[in-house]
Length: 117
Image (cartoon, rainbow, N blue to C red; front, side):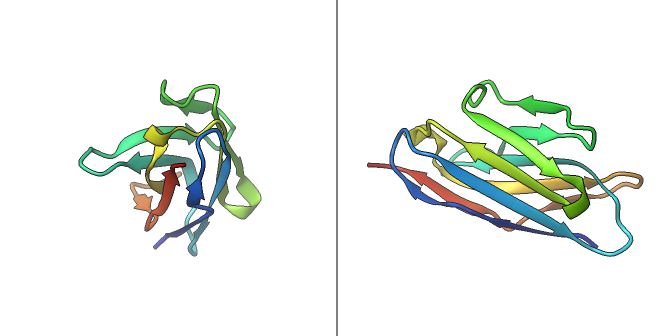
């Protein structure tokens, strides 16, 4: 079983920055694609960004140029650097990871990001 633990959320003013981190832990599991999703009140969960083991990235159009996803494979850790934050970025951000070699998809508990003046 894999556990994902996120950190780094909080309250920030518009135009500010935050960095989210997520550590995957578990025995006997090789982590594949990692990513971040978010869910705002009354809305469906949506993709923010994903990154492969080799570093290939994919971003939602709404965050391109403002957010950067990265990872440290040796630490099973994924990061999301969020710059130029907007009120519409307010949401619970969830870390996601899949098993590299077997079926398996895992979610973190979520971390709240609030962008407000």
